[in-house]
Image 1 (cartoon, rainbow, N blue to C red):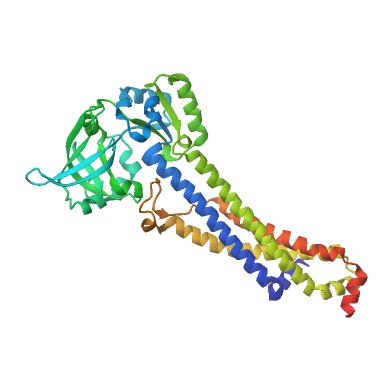
Image 2: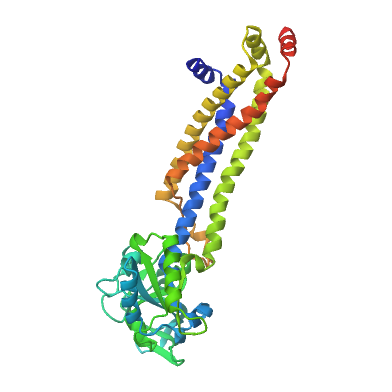
Length: 424
């Protein structure tokens, strides 16, 4: 009987073609949207962690209160000692000190007169340390456009866009004019080692990269750090473990009311990422639910039309002794076959597009020129094992629900009425 039903589904296009198309399109869209949202979440988490929040971050309580102003006068002191303590307490994390800063970047001519000038934000990290993972974490070798990475003190990296707009060449001197941690003016000369482009508009616009030792000297922050970031192995975020470490550290070392007391935050506690991640995950399930509902309605209508067309067939089968329940069950089996065919086709299309987005992506740089979010300008998806089930389950569920609702009419109709329709 099963073989007979399969042949019927494959040979009768009026019975299967339209439902298969609907299921295929619905499943493909569901898979693409689901993997896109996962890719968005992964990109947002990874980008924010690497460039700003870490998986956990430590700063003073006073610094945290006005962190948007980059108050380096409220930075952590004796940070090397604190990092040694953190490495002993939490060896599963890699600890990286950083200093954020802002100011003017002045490009002098041969006579020392200002030739070009622009406002910049800056990020200082351990670029020259032998054991530092910051170069690999930032993928500086991939981001490098011209020149070379800093190899000695006093060298910086600047965005390729700034180098182009200010007609700056590799090896030129650039003067940073900023404010020191003690409230005075800080002026320090750097040499431009190279230009970079990260593919993150917020950074590529005006963020310069320097070694933390140079900035400690330039800003009078000896052994100081604005922030200390912690990263799990392979830079993979572990939310539950991060919150556990945060609670343990704050309970032991952070004292409320003491402005220079260290405070640890997890990734979700920063940049409103906790709410964004929760909303994004909820959207993924809402999208799948909406497509199941819409496909069920469309397939219900398709089932009703098919049922009306097949009333004569149903009448004949009942006339020769088949029960209405058996006819109904066989229709559901046909529906499962249709749903399976449509789901497989939709999965192939959806996963194909998703793998393309994951490996190649779509460059949206032109649409994100004024973006202030730490996100990559390349739209990507993320294919996970769950994507296969997200495609199969809605496709089968929608077709079964649609046919089940449409087929109820067969059970409710009287046998005599079906005979009269057959005679007519």
